[in-house]
Amino acid sequence: MPVPAADDGAVPIVAELCLFIRAHPDARPTLAALARRAGMSPGHLQRVFKRVAGVSPRQFADACRLDRLKAGLREGEDVTTALYAAGYGSSSRLYERAAGQLGMTPGTYRKGGPAEVIRYATAGCDLGRVVLAATARGVCAVSLADTDDELAGFLGAEFPAARLDRDDAGLRGWLEELLRHLAGDQPHLGLPLDVRATAFQRRVWEELRRIPYGETRTYAEVAAAVGSPAAVRAVARACATNPASVVIPCHRVVGSDGKLTGYRWGLARKQKLLERERPVCEPGA
Image 1 (cartoon, helix red, strand yellow):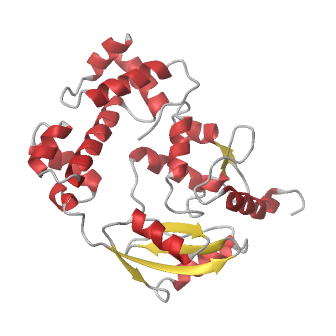
Image 2: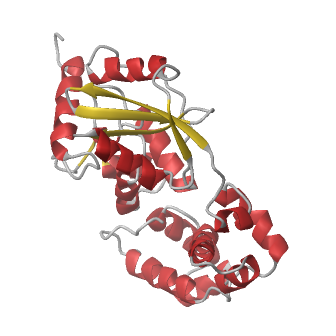
C-alpha cells in the first residue's frame, strides 16, 4: 500500500486521513466528509491525496478493506464473517470488487488459492544463480541469489499456493535471452510479463521498463513520471516489491544524489548491473 512521502506539507493531513480510514472500516466516509475533516474542498483533497499517496481516497479505502478481508480469510474466518468485518456492506459488493483484486473467489482464496502451475528454470551467471519463472501468459518472476536453495525459497514465498514445475527445456529460449541480457550482449529484453500488481505498482513498474538501457532515474523522477510527484516513498516500496529482477529494471532507480540505495537482490549486484549498462551511454562507446 502506498506510503506518503515525508517532504510535503500536505503529508500530515493525508497521513491522518489514512489512519482515520483504516480505523473506521464500516464508515466508508465520502470524499466530501473527508474533505470537511481536512478543511479542504473535495476536489482539492482528491488532488492532494492522490499526489501524496499515489491513489485516490476511495482506492485507498478499497485497498484497506481488501487487506482486512485477506487477513480474515487467512486466519480461517468464513467468507460471511470476513466480508462484514472488513467493511463490505454485502456479499454482492464483495464479489463485485474483491474477487477481481484477489484473482479468485474469496472462498477459493480462503482455501489457499488454486494450484496454478508455474514453470521455472535456473542457470548460473556472473551475478550468481538466476531463476526465471513463468505462467502460461508470461514471466511472473526473476530472482538472483547465491544458491538454488535461496531461489527455491524465493519461489515458495512468492507463490505459496502454486504448483512449481521445473521446465528447463520449455523455458530455454526465455532464459537464454535473459542470460544474454545479463551478460551485456542483448540490451533490449522483449520477454512478456504476467505479474500481479496493484494499480500503483503497475504504473511504477511500467515506467521502470521505459527507462532506457544505460540510463538511470531518481525515485522522485519516477514519481513525477507516474503522476504522483510526492509519492517518492511509495515508488521506493514498489521497487522493493518488484518480483521480476532485471525484466522490471528497478536497479536503474537511484537516490536523488545519484548514490545507490536499497536493492532486493543486493547492492553489489545493482552496482554491477549499472556498470555493465553504463558504457552504452558514454561518448565514443
